[in-house]
Image (cartoon, rainbow, N blue to C red; front, top):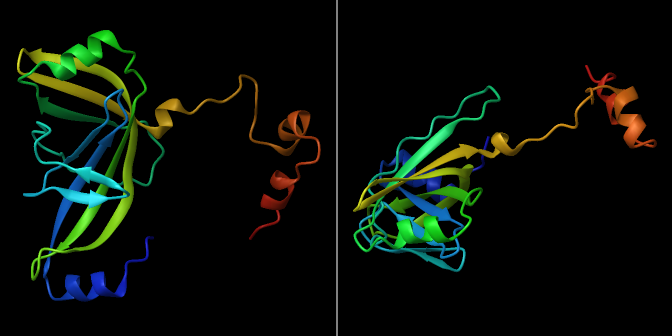
Amino acid sequence: MRNLLAATNTALAKREVVFAALVEIDLPTPIYATDYQRKLPYDSKMFLTSTGLKDVPDIKQEFALSASSYSLVFNDDTSELLSMAANSDVHGAQLDIHVVIISTVDDSIIEVIPSVYRGYLENPVPLDNARMKFEFKNHLSSFEKTAGRRTSSASQQRHYKDDRGFDLVGLQK
């Protein structure tokens, strides 16, 4: 559970907030986009409304481990994204989506919740000559487990002889 600032909790209780997304894609030319009505600063970066981002779909949190997918569509009138995808290795580019909480009283940023979604670019898909779709898989898609490894103390100690973590986990009640 994330701890929110007192100012955020107060504004939420008064229903004086709006939510916006900050979309950060680590491409050769990074994309910093927002679905809010104006540009927003965060983490020494400026998130712009003029990136061609069409829509930010809802993000659902689940209590199961799965490699969920997520798609973003951008208007690409100048074919800049298509050219980047064709001429660079963009596979695996990191996507971070942050949620910004904004006051409806004075339009100020109250708080930013970082990285509510992190994923990696699986597939850039040109939809037509004016739109590009990026398909992402969440961070579990890059999860690697060495073949033959088990989640047990004996398996762990074959590779890390002094590690007793699995022994301690068994003692927890």
